[in-house]
Image 1 (tube, helix red, strand yellow):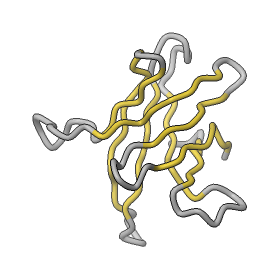
Image 2: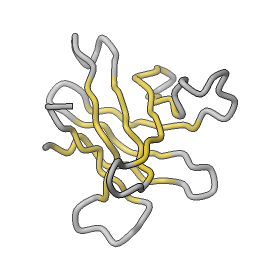
Image 3: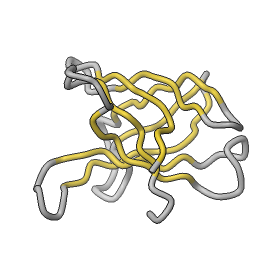
Image 4: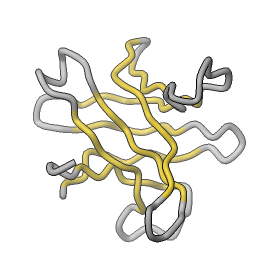
Length: 108
């Protein structure tokens, strides 16, 4: 599993801010909550960079732990022909509960 970047959650707004970094792209991103979803199946977050939408995010609940987590899907021509999926998880060596790593699992 690879770390695609680090984001920091704003506890007041629920938004995340950080950097998405790969060999192809190095972009500051905002993961913004969608407050007025038209349907339950719609994403819970939009992933934005400089006014460009790079993807979306969904709140999920762990099958065994029952803990809530955010899964992200990056899908944009600058990223490549295939969507990249990752999950927000605890960043290594961090005690701050608002710092998350974007963890890519190639099998998801």
